[in-house]
Image (cartoon, rainbow, N blue to C red):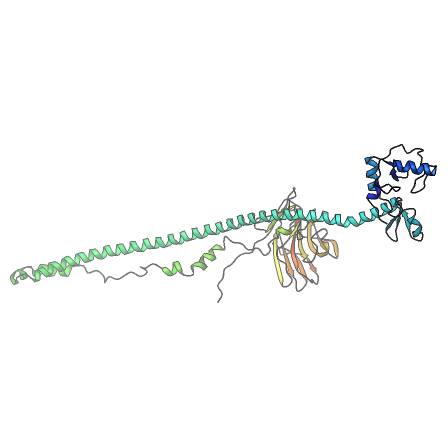
Length: 454
C-alpha cells in the first residue's frame, strides 16, 4: 500500500480539492458543504469514509489549519481505502490500514508505532559500525596530519644533525689540511735555508780561489825577469791557498714528497678514528615510547616526566617505556654493551619481530630487569625469577647467539655471568631497551681500528 500526497487535500465526497475543509476526529477531511449535505442525507453525524460517529454534531467547527495539513502530509493514508495506516506487515514489510489488515490475517502484524520502534533500533544497530568506522577515519585522518607534521620535524632535525656532523668532519679535514701544508712549508723553509748556507759557503770558496787563480795567471803573462822576481811569492801563495772539499749536494736536500703524499687519504682516515665512533646497535626513534628521549646519535635513552606529542604509528611501543634497535638479527652471533651507571630502573633484552608493539608485549620478550635494587629475568614462559649479582655492574654486555639459541648477560668489567636464556629462536630479534628513570643508559661505542689487508 502506498500513500497519496494529494489525497490528503481532496474531499472523498466530491473528489475535488477540499474547499473550506473540516477535519473530523478520525482525521478524515471533507469540504464543509459536502459534509453538511452528507449528514443531512444520512440524518446522523458519521464519517463518510470510516463510518465512525463524529463527536461534532455540526460541521460548522472548522478544524482545517496549516498544522492539520502538515499532519496530513506527514501521516499518509491508504490509497485504496483512505484509512489510516495503523499496522505493519512484518512478512511483507508493508503498511496496512484496518481494511487491508483483513487480507494479511495469517501474517505477523504489528502496530506501526511498535514496528517503527523495533526497526529504528535495528537501523541504529546497523548504523553503529558505520559510526565507529567514521570515528576511526576521523582519528586516522588526524593522526595522518600529525604524522605529516612530524615527518617535517624529523626531516628538519635530521638535516640539522647531518650538517653538524659534516661541519665537524669538514673542520677536522680543514685543520688536517692546514697542518700538512704547514709541515710542507716548514720543510721547505728548512731545506731552503740549508741550500742558502751551502751556496754562501761555496761562494766564499769560489771567490778566494778565483782571486788566487787570477793573480797567478797575471804573473804568468809577465816578462821573464819580472816573473822570476815574483815567482817565489806567487808559488808560495798558490801552495798556501786552502782547497775546500769537493763540493756536492747534501743528502736529503730535496722535499720528501713521499712523506707528504704517500697514502695521504689513508693516513688522514686513520687519524680520523679518534673522532669517529661506531655503535653495534642504533636505536629506532620511530619505535620509542613517548616518555623516552633519545640522544642525538641514537645510542642513549632516558625517561622524561612530560609525554611528548608523537605519531601513534604501528611501530611505536605504547605500553612499556621502551625502544628497540633499528636492525634485527635472525642469524649469527651479536654483542652490545650498555652503560647503565646509576640508573635505578632499566630493562635489557630482545623482542621478536612479529610481536605486536601495542599494549602488552611480554609474549615476544626476553629480558633482564633491574628495579628496586634487585635483578630479575623474565621471558614468555617465566613471569619473573630473581638473579643474584656480586655487585651492581656499571656496564652490562648482552650477547645473542641466534643460531645456538642463547641470550646471555655479563658484567662487562668483571666478565661475571649474570644469566643465560636458552630458547630455539625462530624469527628475527630486535635489541630491546627500557628505562623509567631520568638517568640515561647508553650503548657503548666499539673501538674503531683502521687496517690495510694484503
